[in-house]
Amino acid sequence: MFRSPGAIALQLGPLTIRWYGVLIALAVLVGTTLAQREARRKGLDPEPLMNTIVIGIVAALVGARLYYVAFNWDYYAGNLTKILAVWEGGLAIHGGLLGGLLGGGAYALRRRLPVTHYLDICAPSLILGQAIGRWGNFFNQEAFGTPTDLPWGLFIDPGHRPPALAQFEFFHPTFLYESLWNLLVFTVLVALLRRPLERSPGGLFLAYLGLYSAGRFFIEGLRVDSLMLGPLRAAQVVSLLLVAASGAGLLYLLRAGGPAPRST
Image (cartoon, rainbow, N blue to C red; front, side, top):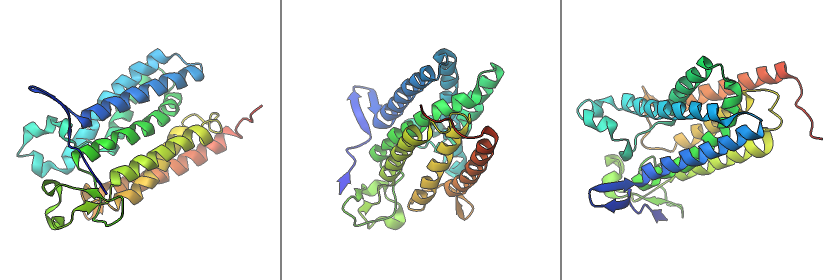
């Protein structure tokens, strides 16, 4: 059993530094560094890639917040100032993916940059950044699962428990499950799939979407704070669609691209 030490990392007078923001910044730093290295490995100039990434990150943050706010509009309609309070949590991964793809993709297309190569470069960075960022949910005591008596159960303070589950103390640490799954996906992408898919630009990104979404579908089933699409969990619906799109896209690319190059 374990518990969060709290959302605040450092308090310096009126300045409050929260773990959520620290982890997002760390995820961006690690992800961009990894992407730069991968661009150089592929023989591409990292400067235009970094410009694309910066625009993609800004668009992703906006998309992630708007997606979350849209599904919780009843709350934010009466608390409009809270829409900007991203440090309190409330960023949806699927909204971030959509925003980042639209923003970064539009910029890359306008500059006639190699979009599919950029997507493949960024895929490992994205999943590794998600693995790091999920720990922000731990410090904020959010995105946890149903009650559990397992040894790794997460203690949730009474003020963060859903009213219907107020009598329970320990819950599934779904943030941890997803973080570990994301690390596994990162390893698979880099160690097993990167070289075989090099002749199919866009393939590694599609593999990332499919693998991440497969894990997210099952983990989402444990959560008690899912964004809902009518009677369905929105993340599960989107995950199924992404798994299907990933599989169809990979099949098309592999058929069109021929066999992968052999190592010599």
